Length: 535
Image (cartoon, rainbow, N blue to C red):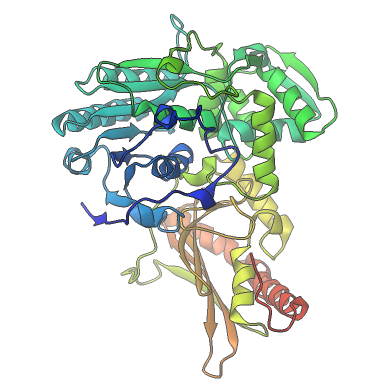
């Protein structure tokens, strides 16, 4: 097990996000929202939407934080990375996770398998049992788990049933456990918010399944984080689940109409129908919104049930703030503000898609004899290196890929219908990238400021693919844009795929070379003399 020792925690006043930062408690009651007092908190799922936001909240509350990741390198660009201890471990590896839990006061279990495969429930159970046994062996003070809100005495979907089972496994362990059960979590970049946003914005007239009339109790992400941090202070005799939700009980139809009002959109017309199953609905959501069907399906399946809190006992242990919990409209307003300001801390796409390749490009690949195909191009750019870098770091999303937009859109649509992410994931930030960020159907695998951006394809392919974008200098000091597309085929299908797309490389990759060069040179001409382009 590898470790990267961090420095002492600090208060992250520079990382405040209005839709994330929990509101403070009454004067003199800081302990009510979690007074870490130097205690050690372990966080799993740190590359995901909630985990990535929980870490700075724990640091701000005074906890020492140990972040667990299977690939710690994907965390290296996070703003809090220098303030935490990072441990390489897989929660399903008994030895590694036991060592990671050594000396921990409170452990946050934020692991969910989102795969649609038939074995994911069994994997969820095995991982939860391994974690629970390790936490007990290491005498961890408390485990906190964020699960899903579900109705009693109803047949649950496979995903929701798995969330229930994991909660019960953790509660049955000797370690005092808090299970927080939430329905729809609203915040900039959350999958639930993105679903509401894109369905409402793109479809002024919608044919919707009857589940849009089911009642839901959404909760703002800042209140979820407040409950997570505050749960660390529960006394040892507390071992139970809590329903957590915001102050509003709405139907999904109410949520879409409410979003339209907050966003200043015309009133949406909705035509409910009885024929759309969760499976069909998830395909529909996958086509209309950036959220792919693998993630949309468990979200949709939870909406088939009425998910309303049956109690609010959590307030006895983590008191509500004086101004109350954040309502639906205010949560939407703040989330939209973060999106418009391009100030989104984490997104649903922060975690890799189920089934997406995660193999990094080997530094010294031993593939030979045609097993690694390369399309390499180099162009001299009449612009400073840092100007070219800004263009490359801003690639994808709204700016596109600087070549044949119709071809990229068509390939993205094909990928979308085959179950891949397509081009609709966009970017977390329009100007700046971090290792681990999603960029359309790519994932940032490597980033070196002013020098290298390596993207790994997560689209559906018969092989593994990377796009390497480099800024270099030639012997006489000119700026070079070096671009490499690499493909490692799998079987005959992979060989055939490369042969089929090779004739289009001059248009796609050659066009990218020319257009990136022109964009960088134009940016250099427009910048005042001696100025440095800012993000």
